Structures are given as structure tokens and as C-alpha cells.
Amino acid sequence: MPHGVVPMDPTPTQQNTRWWNLADRVGATASFLCAIHCAALPFVLAILPLIGLSFLADHAFERGFVLCASALALVALVNGYRRHHRSLPLRLALPGLTLLVIGVTFAESYSIIVHSVLVTCGGLLVASAHFFNLRFDRLHGHVHGPQCAHG
Image 1 (tube, rainbow, N blue to C red):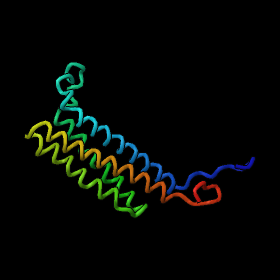
Image 2: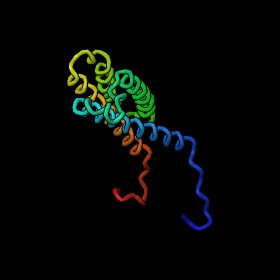
Image 3: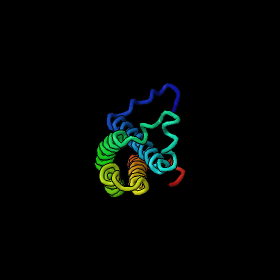
Image 4: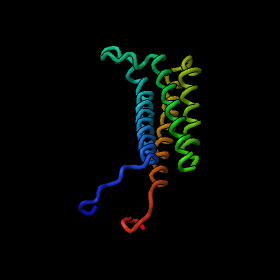
């Protein structure tokens, strides 16, 4: 930037996009951590009370987490679709959210393995949806110019 030129404040649209990117990043991180938690749960179930983390195995905690993650995913991904008009994030999220809901409701009465597989796969699908949403937002907002290294 030339000396003496004051950078312009980001437009409201740019600020909104930043907030939605943050929502996608939080959602992707939460979904990925949820998938790791659910995959590891059968192996660490016995030691959680020893280290003071028994609440992580509580069904009420899982249901609340899935409810919050589902709401965040739907709001962020629908808003992303409105910006970039690509349906892949929604096509990944909907089966992922379905697996999560089935995993924390109906599958609780089955084996811990069935429960863990459902919620792990669901969490990974939702995390992937957030990652693609971020990618499409980045591509959608990118303007090619002389400074581009790729064209």
C-alpha cells in the first residue's frame, strides 16, 4: 500500500462474511471434536470418571451438544448457500445431522459401538460440510487480478 493511503474499512458484507466464516470454523472444529469424542468413547469410557470428565459420557450432554451443533450448522450452511449457491455443504450436512440425531436418540438403547459409529460418521459429515462451505466462500469472494499467482 502506498505511503499515506488509509485502508478502507471492510464493507458490511465483508464483515458479515467474516462472522459466517467464524461460525463455520467453530462448527467445523466442534463437529470434528465431536467425531473424535464419539470414536474414542468406547475405549475411554472406563477412565472418564477417574479424570473428572464423566459428564462427556452423559447422554444429556451429548443431546445438548448435538442440538447446538445442528442449529449452528443449519444457520451457517444455509447462509453459505445463499452466498455461493453451491449445495454440496448442505448435501453433506443433512445426512450427517440425521446420523447425529439417530445416534443420540434411537441408537442409545443399542450397543455403544452402534451409537459411536453413527455419531462419529455424522460428526465427520457435518465437519466436512463446514470445511466445504468455508472453501466455497473463499472461492466466491476471490477476485482474480494481476497479483494472483494462479492466473
